[in-house]
Image 1 (tube, rainbow, N blue to C red):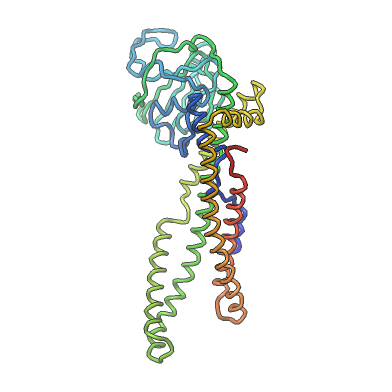
Image 2 (cartoon, rainbow, N blue to C red):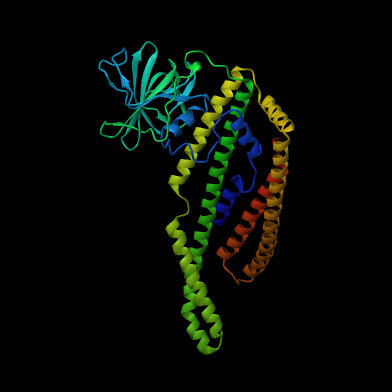
Length: 412
């Protein structure tokens, strides 16, 4: 059992203090310079909290996306509606042909022709509520599951109309702190998006994927570690109980001291408490892993869209790397911050590595002693396997830290 879990751990990529590439300060600088949203952990599967969040998701595809019509705007009859009334939704202006994304996870339940090449896509959410995205050209099919941030179509006019209903069919004002602005010039004229903006967008998408991968791998690792701890405690507690039941007799016979008996009792109580805590917490949260897996899928979708946009303009990843290096070289303050980041990352890695190597040395000595005791029948196989597993985990951690230290840079 221990060998199998240890093998899983050793085959699972370890991240720990591995710095993101490029340095976070570079990502933040380019995000601000080109008005692109900075990647935020866990921002995909939870869905948009309000209108501002939804707009931010669309800004990944077009940084200038803004809200141009509100929930309580009055609309007269038109080719889209037979009766005058409130808008009951929000228009997010984006140029014709631009990809747009779902704001919440759910299943596509309807795709309806509105007018010409403009369709409405309805996505139902697990809680029974639904959202219809209008004035769009669909890239999904009925029955397909979609994720927050996942591109589900392109703009077929000059905006996407987003209308939300609750489980009872009532329209929902999800506006939050979103602001309605006048329609920008590019809503009627094709915008000019610079090559630099496209490269920055690709860079941020790559950075988002790296963060999602890191979170997912670390959660898997922590789950395996907790399982090993549970397994060890489930074997340790019964053994301590058995030895404690014999302690009173041993004390009377003078075979062990009363202090030893008390220490054994204290160790048993501590082990029982720790076992209860770990069993209550669980080895790993299936919901958390599922969420992180969806984060990963959404991040990959974002990267694919960004890469496609770059490829259409003849931009390669090598050019993106050159763009980052030039940005750092031409900005003294940024270059200074990158150097400080590299120094700090290397210092943290060195401290972590020193601690792990010390623990590994102790674990190696313990394993050697346990192997000798096992040959003499002094300990059980489970105790030996526990010591061996601990050493293997520490070896994997040391290897991960050394690997991350060699890759610390502003961008490489």
